[in-house]
Image (cartoon, rainbow, N blue to C red; front, side, top):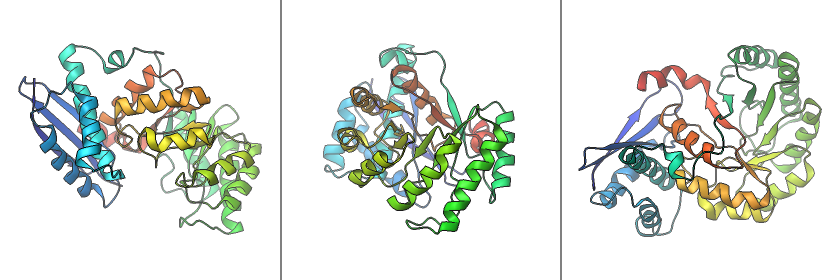
Length: 334
């Protein structure tokens, strides 16, 4: 069996960034589907990477997945990594696994070692769109809990995104978390998103104020591009620290583990290098006592399906992401 064609499909979900799906065809009549992580205004660059990588993939055996991803980094990328190239590699890697699973008649999690669980916990994201005040966040949180979600992730910080913020912005973020906790009660897990943007002085001070509301985690208080700074923040913050969505491949996660900079990592299957790379990153995390919560700022179709395959078979899985605001458009695509 050989790969015969690669076709990217850029889809407008109606709001926010576009989704990028990839179809890989073979001469055996089996086609595989994958999805690439995208970022607003950079999606066409990722499409170009998919198309150029296709020249390396056509004529190859779709079972040779590890060889393809290794070659893509060394030969195609010239050992120069970036989000665009890793997103393209990841989407194609997912499609190859889809082909292999279909050919063998097996779910991919069986091919990756078999399941460690039969249920996957998810947290809701994307539910708080348009909320500007603590009361608005609280009302939307209640609506989301009514839908059956027991964990809510949200960014309580007012815009614009800046490294240094005012005391008023800090106070508003704390008030928002307080309002949501009061609205949903103590049994719902609250996952606080910071989006990598704060300087340590703000990240630490706000975390200490939020501790009394019992957050499930504190995600990316500072950028993981300065692992020493992240590790220092973790030592000063009494909440579980998450990082990983801006890191790609095992190489970039290594320093996080070695410097004990996080309690939880959240690599994204659509940009970290694919299914096998995510599983290998999770395996690296195990001896450091770090758990894995896959990031999934992608569609709730192909990307979520791929995320669930890995989540099923890694022993140190914690929870994964579900964007509720993508549901309607995802149903149309599916």
